[in-house]
Image 1 (tube, rainbow, N blue to C red):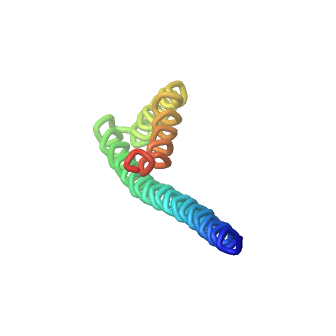
Image 2: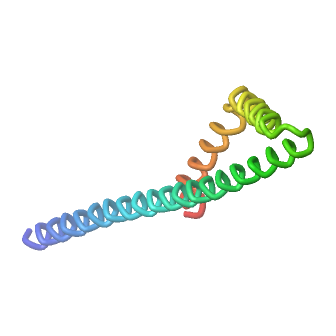
Length: 118
């Protein structure tokens, strides 16, 4: 009878260790996925800032060029502002397809990437 109790106690200890190991594994997977998402977000923000600077300087250069070409500097800036307004309207009208869906797909892919490998 003592042998049965010893086996049950050993089974309980093993089960407790197994559950704790599964919990630790889940925590590690969550931490890994979170770190990947945060790292990708930081990289995306840095790339967006660099791209924003590029667009700003390229816009100023284009405005100055157009202003010199037309003969009125303000007209060059007005044309560039109109181009930016048109681009903004197009992005706003297609924001679902251009922004929201790709971001959702990237997040979902990042969250479930390791699950496919297991």
